[in-house]
Amino acid sequence: MHCISLIFVSCFLNVALVQSAEEDYVRPETFEERLGRLEELVDIQSQTIAELKQDNTNLRDTILNSTLADEQVAFYAYLSQGKCYNVHETFIFDIEELDTTNSYANHDGVFIAPVNGVYAFSFNVVPDFWHYTQAELVVNGQVKARVFGDSHEIHDIHPTSSTVVLALNINDHVYVRLGHQTECNVISSEDHQWTYFAGWLIF
Ligand SMILES: [Ca+2]
Image (tube, rainbow, N blue to C red; front, side, top):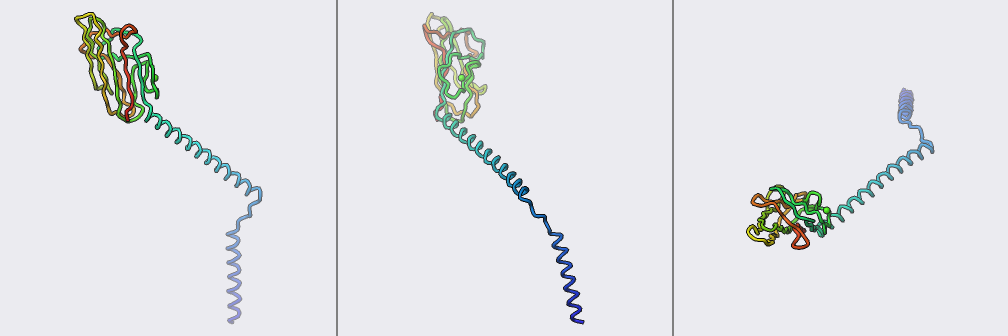
């Protein structure tokens, strides 16, 4: 009886093992299938490497550009000729002698800070003969410096200038405009002086 029981258990185990093996069976891959899968992996790896190379190039350019901007921000521009300005009209210093980071635009007269930092700005304004002129240095709409040149009662040139130091954030807008306590004629000429605007990053 004991022997019959053993045979029965043995048969049961065999059937169970065969069923389990059939369930776990995975058809062996052919060489072509494995090769195809490897090619897919190589393509994915190549794509990843290309993306990493591009990221590396972008990072290097960013670092180089930020280093240049930190060390070399400077501009200087002047008016090619004088004119009669309206109150609060921006002076468009159209002759650009220097603009190392292309941050001053000689079509609208605005300098846009390329990096955070402490900057120096200098501007010189030349009132016409028999004129008094007020001008303002403006940052984002706020007046930060004023000058006033007065030859109202004399046929003379009385230029007026100022140099200021300001802490700016990146993208701050800086420009020079006519003030409100003023007459309109500003001159800029070879014969006398140029009306100019300059700035540079200190640190
Ligand atoms: Ca420029």
